[in-house]
Length: 255
Image (cartoon, rainbow, N blue to C red; front, top):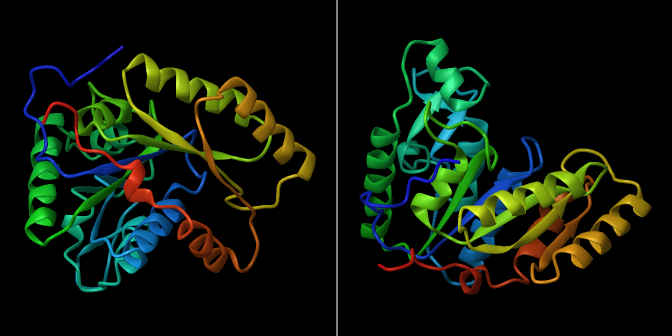
């Protein structure tokens, strides 16, 4: 088990939340964007970050673009925003970050990623932001660099972790493993969000998943059970604005 928090330079203090998933494709970016929009509606000045983005493409001007980063920029309401403030490392191949970087001969280095992320957090603070909402890559144990996983990034930032899980079959196993891995690393957990990212889930599966997770994780709140439908964006925005996400955020401990 790799834990990278001890005796390392830490990011500047800024209250935040870290959004991870039980897997890739569970709707982390949609949830993160909804949280950003809700924070703005609630009078906050959030920073949105996705430190690493795999599957980026160059636009007509030769600038790297990533669909998740574009969604977060849209949620911030600033289409001209420097994308490096949101994403510190873009990779073309849609693979785990360290694999995507290795395939093109440009290793993703942990110290350089931390440095870029620290600089970005500092820039957000200088812009007057009072809340950082950080989205991870894939699941909590997704390989990040050759030595680290997304869990190490979450530990270094030391923000409370929101776990996004599917509402369908397999969620119990994936969610319980994610919670166990997070707790073994001493991560603070802010709760769960159950989401239908693509197709509607069988109502019985959705109901029993939530009931069973509540039974097995009684101290972990489920903040949302979100359906997939054509008006998803409006529905998600309405849901997200009912929760004060700033209350769930926290600064890194000991700083």
